[in-house]
Image (tube, rainbow, N blue to C red; front, side, top):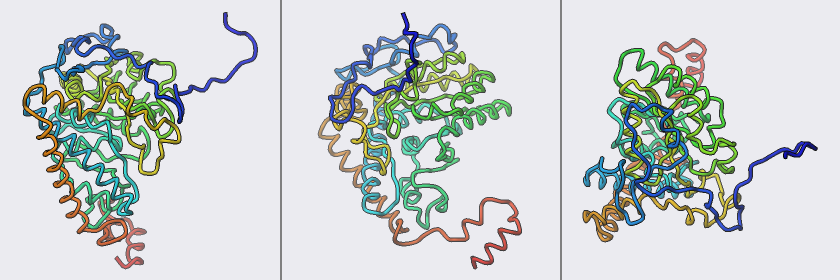
Length: 410
């Protein structure tokens, strides 16, 4: 019987604090291949269980098993492995550049490479992503030039955004990458609005919304679900559950819902959880959700269960709020190692070829970095022109800005 005495305020607590032993015993991991693959037009009420399970394809032996397997060829998987390896190498060089004072800020993707790299290959040209700051894999996997990404990070004279955005807040309409916003969750409802506009204009393009587990506590997340479900917007609603917001564990934002995917059930949205460190599973679920959207069957909410191995950003020290060895204890492993082992198991890859590929990719990344740094870095070399702050905003510059530009002499 509940205590009828004095009320007590409840604050969720993580399983372990710094100095403790990492514990993921509460993460229930189904056997790979055990979760069913529903028909594309399934009634959301018939797949409620998928919001509480985890779709997995790769088993512990590196084999692809179950009904979600078999969508990608060996060549496509080798390409996917290279994309993830490139993103990881890119991350390492840019993190080092930040420590060297060449840029003011950086955010790594360490441990989360499969989520964005695999998802991008499930989309079609013209589809639009509304990303957070940890989906650079969408650009890498779509062939966006690393030099251009680095120019933006350095805010140099070749920065395509003219120094108007924080480092790593990329933008590319041609590559389906909507301008990143530093305000949490705003992109979620924008994605739904863009998808609705695509449907209203009888277009064929769909949208993908991206959000982290912590930002689901923002009101825009819930508003987006209302509009997406009401108007059956052609949008994939992605939630990247990497276990930690900047300093708080996922339980703060998740509340008592059990999983983030379960949030979609109350809106009548089909909701799935997928192993975010399994490239094959991520791609298969993304393909399923994208096809639903393209067939006018409405939105799908997908929760990617993964782990943020690195710090939240170059300004963060995760040792202050979680055990240092926690990432090593994460039960779903490393996405690059898992895909590598799968390809070795299939006989199309080897440890020797992997080591060689790492060296080749690092050489390519370093060459791109050298080219970008010829255009300047944070404290050296060319910068965007001062006049750029006055241009590209208004079709016809208002008088007060013309006066300010004249006063600035630019």
